[in-house]
Image (cartoon, rainbow, N blue to C red):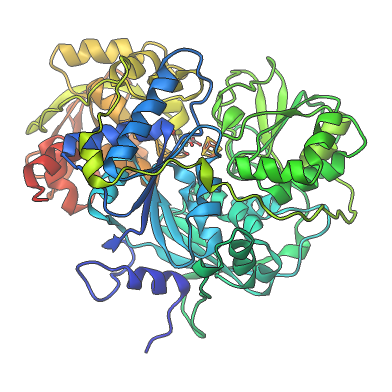
Amino acid sequence: MKPLNLVEKILKDHLLEADELPAAGELIKIKIDEAFTQDATGTMCMLQLQAMGISRVKPLSVNFVDHSMLQSGFRNPDDHEFLKSSAKKLGIIFSPPGTGICHFTNMENFVKPGMTGVGADSHTVNAGGAGAIFMGAGGYDVALAMATGAYTMPMPSVTKVNLTGQLNKNVMAMDVILKMLEIVGVKGGKGIIFEYGGPGAKTLSLTERATITNMGAEMGATTSIFPSDENTKAFLESRGRGGDYQELSADEGAEYANTIDVNLSDIEPLVAIYPSPGNVEKMKDHAGTKIHQVCVGSCTNSSYEGIAMFAEALKGKRVVVDTLLYPGSRSVSMQLADAGYLKDLFQSGVRIMENGCGACIGQGGSPPSKSITLRTFNRNFPKRSGTDDAQAHLISPLVAAASALTGEMTVPEEKEIKIVEVPPVIDTDSFIMPLPQEEAEKEDIVMGPNIMLLPDFDPLPDEVKGEVLLKLEDNISTDDIQPAGTYLPLRSNVKEYAMQATFRLVDGTFAERSVAHRDAGGYGFIIGGENYGQGSSREHAALCPRWLGIRAVIVKTFARIHVANLVNFGIVPMTFKNAADYDKIKQGDTVSFDATNLDGDLALTVNGESIPLEPAFDKDHIPTLKSGGALARFKETYKG
Ligand code: MIC
Ligand code: SF4
């Protein structure tokens, strides 16, 4: 038998409707062992399950609350109630606010080696640290996975990352993934699963591995994975889950599409300079730059071990800039307390914040105007911090500690740091379990006044004609399209979220112009450059533009999750056959395309010229596009 790599083994084990794995790029349908949402994407997901008429989910499912926790007003708490009551009724576990960041809490409690999963959040890939294949997806795709236990995606190719050597004392897992970003870039991971291995992998703990797989999202990768070995076992056993362990690795002689060699011993402290996780530079080249704030946490760097290293580096000294800490979970916070670190951190002047996403998604913790903030987070896109003219650079917890003490970007000293070893605190009591089916039938779903039912969208016309409402550059992120931060309380209300936020930070007139164009019978177009839609999985970045009348997005290249979301909301995603044609189109141009045969040659007519296009959708998605979106198509075809 042909030796298989780890990705092939797990995918083969989960194949539905086929016996063999397809070639890279072809669609693959797999069984899903776990599906989850978080609050900022979850309410849409629950609305979609309602619209689908689903009364009970199939795979293990969890609704986490970790993003929208400021609760300044009724909207966030109403969303939480909606998620809790939906969970109870539909058979979903509910993780209430304060329990922890979805990816972190998921790893602590639910992920097992060899599992497959989808989550309505791009950093779902975090779970790859435990030898599982987990992917970020839009809310509709997660709702579908909850309803059917299946997920369809383009078969990725597998790149081996061969790790050798060992981390230096002032270098952390964060620096490893920054190194990968330096090598691969923010779009180089598209269509790829990175399979880590080699002797260096054995030197990394499970939480260090998760830091690395987590930020695979920033390379645009489908996901990343580490083998399951003694370190995986140690993590699971420490959480009373030894029975969930199985050893998993690639077969001897397994093949890979590509190999990247990384010697851990060669890595030095790195930093991703604002405004992209891909702008990786050496910390030492920035040493001495004045900073104004330090934030530690996020799903990337909020483990007990990471925070304990941070606390040890600060011990007995005082931070000189505003320093905020967001632990990954209640369990991590309790472990920090048991070890005495909470007191140490308070004594060092650190602000201990809630176990949640917090400043990472602009829920408080914004830096001052024109300042520099250092963050152990995974994204530093423009304006994401909530302060338009502040710059966020991404760093490891050790760089965070060294810099918080000096008020300048500082390379940490190379010295041994020993952390206090205390056992993790098991926190399964925080979860609210679903009701048994009979009781669930009597349960009502609670929907506050801000929660708007999903709009019905019309089918695609044969001739799509209208105006180019926006022309954009390369690397437009979903934070540019549909900002989060202060707009998060609007996640359950498509109309308000679209009118108040869509492209608001890029062009404040977009929403009003689009509605006027839509109401006059026009179909809106957006033109963009490379890697359009990078970043989060938020389907609102497709849903809200669709509500505003956008029917086609034409760019040089798309990011993976966003293109799936566009299809799900009936927006036709296409790319230029010749990238140079991008220059022939201006904002305000009247354009059209013939959508009668989406399987044939596609072209955009602009100023009397025909510009050839390529579909960015798969042939199988044509019926969805024609029906006006995935929900409409589901209702037409689903047999239960
Ligand atoms: C993010 O980090 O951008 C988010 C907020 O977690 C998103 C999900 C969302 O927009 O709700 C993500 O990464 O998918
Ligand atoms: Fe939350 Fe930030 Fe992680 Fe997104 S990247 S899930 S906002 S901690």
